[in-house]
Length: 97
Image 1 (cartoon, one colour):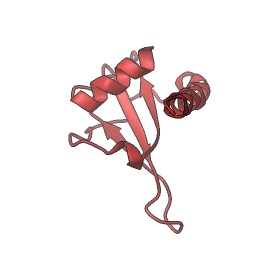
Image 2: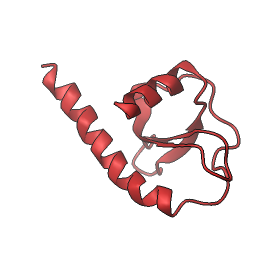
Image 3: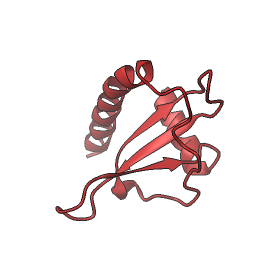
Image 4: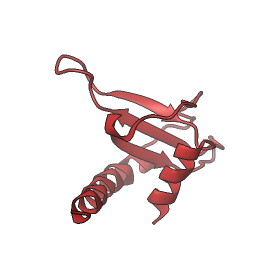
């Protein structure tokens, strides 16, 4: 039973890494996140996440969450998560493994 959550996390991490490999090279010359979300975002609401390291023109680590659509008519929403908060630290730790 514990295999399923681990397999899902590994699959999610692989998808994010593949997407991130192209996004970092083509990224903008500025910060994407001006203000990070400071409140906890439930894991069930997160579809995927991306972590962008500090860049030459952005001195911040940026964590971008893609939230699941609320209903079928709405689109997925992206939010920035503060890397200084507990959830941001946990995602960075998960990312670095």
